[in-house]
Structures are given as C-alpha cells and as structure tokens.
Image 1 (tube, rainbow over the protein chains, first blue to last red):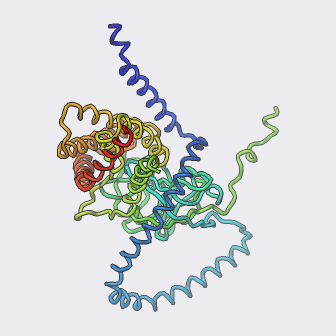
Image 2: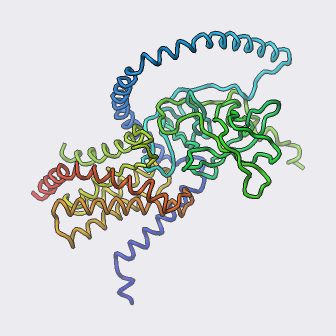
Length: 294
Length: 171
C-alpha cells in the first residue's frame, strides 16, 4: 500500500487533475476581464494570425471571384430589373428620414436607443474546435471596443464581444451554447411588437430560439425579428432574422419562436462592432446618496 | 535557426487550423457535417513517435495552453488533453513496432481520443447538448476522415523531419 502512494506517476496524475479542475472552474467563473498574461498572449498571437490569415484570404477571395465571374451575365440581368424598384425605395427612405428628424425635433428627442456607432473590424481567427463558436477580430479596447457590444455583419446580428484585449477581441456567436448568451429581441408585427429573448440555438435545424414570448401573442411565420435595445448594451433595430416556426414552450405558459438568422454564421470575414450611441445611466447616479447616509 | 524551426512549424499548424475552419464551406457533400481539423495534435503525436524523447509531451503542454488561451477561452481542456494523448501514444509505440502504417493507425487513435475527451469535457461543463449518437454521426466520423487524409499526406515528411531533428540533438 505505501508503495502505491509513493508512485510518482500517480501523484503527478492526481495533482494534474486537481489543477485541471481548478483551471476550468476559474475560466468558467464568469470573470469580467482576462488576466494580463492571457491578454498579452492573445494579442501577440493576434499579430501572427493577421500576418498569416490576410494573405490566405486574398488568395481565397481571388478564387471566389473567379467563380462569381461565371454567373455574372444572368446576375446582371436580374439586378438591372431590380434597379428601378430601388430608386423608388430610395426616395421613399429619404422622405421618411426627413420626416423622422423633423418629428423628433418637434418632440425634442435627443438620442434614441437605435443610434449606434459602427466600428469596422476584420476576422483574423476562429476557434477550430467547434464547441464554443468564437471569432477573433483585429480591433480591441484601444479602438474603443468593450465587452458585451453587439457585433453585426451587413446581413444582421451575429453575436457579442466576449472579451477585449488592447489590440484584439473575441466575439461569441449567437450559435454558441452559453446560458449567459441572452438578447432582448422584438418581433415586428402589425400594430404592436412582441417581446422575448433570444436564448440558445438549435444545432440540428440551424435556427435560433426566441423564448419567453407571451402565450397570447400571435406570432406569424415570416415576421422580422430585431433587437429591442431594452437589454441595456445592444442598440435597437439590429436585424436578427425571420420567424420560421412557432411552438408552445415546455409548460405552455409561453411560446418559443424558431428564427432563421439573417447572417450566415459560417462565412464571416468583415464585421461591425456596434457601440450604442445613447448613454446608459450609471448605476451610481441612480442610487440616492442621501439614503445611504441614513 | 534550427532551434526555432520546430516551434515555428507547430505555430504554423496552430494558425492553419483556425484558417481552415474560417474558409471551410459549411456544407460538405450536401450534409452539414462538422469537420474539425486536429493538425496540431497530429504533428505533436508524430513528434512524440519520431522526435527526441519527451519533446512531444512538452510541446503538447505548451501548445495546449496556447490553444486554450487563444481559441477556447476555457483553460484546462486542451492543456490536459494534448500532453495526455501524446503520452498515451508514446506508451503505445513502446509496445507496437514503429512502421509507417502502424504510426498512421496510432495517430488516428490519438485524434479519436482527443475528440472524445473534448466531447466528454464539454458535456460535463454543459457547453453542448449534443447526444452521443448525433455527435458520432455528424462530427466524430467526418472529423476522423478529414484528419486521416491529413495524416496520410503528411506522415512521411514529418517522419523525415523529426528523425533528422532527433539525430541532430543526439550528435
């Protein structure tokens, strides 16, 4: 028996299991910031990644362009037919924009939840083990990117900033399974909007799940889902996707809508990080100081 | 210069894995298979088999840590799995004979162990709700096929390079 405990290998094994559990627990503890050695390592590898991934993307894009050239003729025809419609739409948008600013001036509204500052960034890496869907982008806290900001592509919302280092940041996609991944969203219906939360992703169907929709709300197929801006960090009006299917939730008190995401989560190269324009009131300002003194 | 060649080579595979996932089309042969490259693991296994003693486990540890910090942001999973798989392969190689077919077989077993280990860990920490049946059909088998092709393509160049390295260290 004593020999069993003196076995060097066994001790190494036990110690490493303890370290392993401690490290995983530490990483999952929901820390708000990465430690500085981690930040340093991430930024350093970020430079190497940029150096390698940019040229490869150029080569890949070149071949993609060649492929696109093949269907240029048919595409061009189709696009021309849509052009007339576009001109009409554009004038309408102009008119509505003007109306909107005028009305806002009358009502004296200075900032709205939907105002945001987009910041361009390029994807330089992606988590190769596909358990947690993470992207690495080439802008960091030096460029004003902070934790929990919304990340969008031209086609819609894709995720949020998980961590930001000085020169790079990590983006967590909506498709990754994480209980803290929750976005306040609204379904645009005629008349009134319906509110709920985007929580979770159905891997087999490739659809996002919008939960906690009131059971009496009438959600229809094909309705558009946007971010509601009520969660605090995300601006309002970012496109998320379209409703595909509605099902009652587990206990029948609420409904779950399945949403086809507008953005493609697999092919992402350029993203925009949306910094919300309107200022969030600081919690310190909301607390009445006098009460504390009592 | 020779000294830095090995870390640089492994670093290259470390980055290629990420680029591979970025450029990979989502649908392969009309099915939504999840293809996960484990090129770095293969390089480390072959380093354990052909390279100088203990190098595989050491580099497995270093690159496991790097992988966890940079890619997964959950420290511990690959930090533990990379050296463990390298060590198991090292022990297996002592029992079995070192011919190239056997090494290919051992490498694919190593990759399978890594995949299964990562799956189990992710189930334990509740980061996936995939059932084992759908995991093995959609992810494990396609992944092993992809990595098997990679092993067949690279086993010979790796063998030559690592054997040379072991010789230069002995001399």
